Image (cartoon, rainbow, N blue to C red; front, side):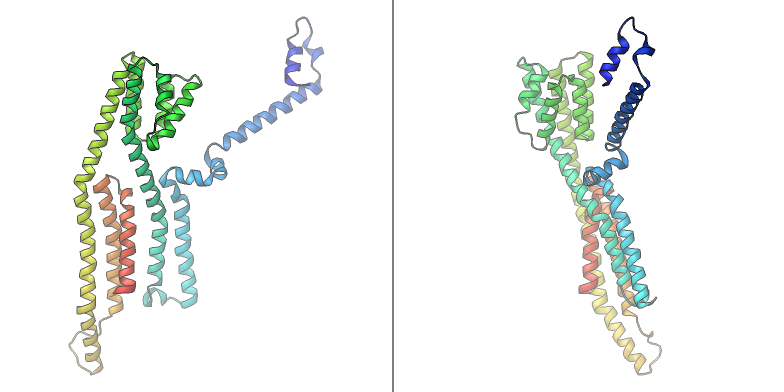
Amino acid sequence: MGIKDITNRLLNKGEPVNNQVTPTELSSMEAEFTEITTKLEQERQTREGFGRFMKHPLQVLTERPENILVVCIPLSLLLFIGGTLFMVRSYGMAVFFKTTSIDDLAVFAVLLSIVPLALLDFKEQRRVKNLENALPNFFRDLAGMNDSGMNLPAAVHIVATAEYGTLTPHIRKLDNTMSWGVGFVEALYLFGQGLGTKVADRSVDLIAKASRAGGDVSEVLRAAAKDTFEVVNLQQERANNMIIYVVIVLVAFAVFCGVIAILVSSFLTTMATAGAKATGSGAVGFGGIIDLFLYKRLFSHAAMLQGFFSGLVAGQMGEGRFVGGLKYSAIMLIIAWVVFRFII
């Protein structure tokens, strides 16, 4: 007997409840309610937190660039600590002073941490840029459709058939949401949440509040389109004006590496050779033997640190976000490592 049958029996007028529901039926109802509650709780756990991560790990790790650090940082620490222990066990403590193996492990560990984040951030910024560039056209087209006499659901349905690049799937989702009877304002807020950009949130909030206030929706859409267009233009203008400073940072790093390469290959090498000859012949007062390996290692550390932090500065100056400079940091760190391991 199902819940519906038992409920109907309970609702029958004139029949005592105690005589209609047996303990067996009550136990069955409780078991069924418990099973439903358990399934709902399991489903809720798979939609948020650790349960969602276990069900869709790749999606969770890539939906926001910084999420990838949850995997990259432990892996990089494991690589560095495990590699260091292996080197010390195999070659002793001299591995810290006589070779660059530990330095190489540190470089690879840092690259393992920042390269995935830099790639995902670069991809996310391209997505955001494409969305924000398409938003003004979408708002203008929607306003034009509304001026022609269409209501907003019909206008969204017509506009959803056009092509707006990265924005197209979100517009079609907005059309589907409104086709299920969801109000324009609520559907618009869901649309803005799906885009996940500051410019989109600002425009959506402006349109929603004006629509609730009872204003002319077409004029509001045009105002939002103009505002979005101006914000995107200002961002592009800022990026164009700051690109020269990013280039200066990159050139300064290249000059630094070039100066060190000349210094090591000419001056320090000559001094080391002369010092070794003087020491071998018993001469005093020349300054002793120059440890060329130590100088190269110190210079390589300086170049790698400058490359890493100069990349962060370039990102802050060029994009207003130091995370945006991780791609420069990774490139300059690789260049410094290659130069000092294979060229100098």
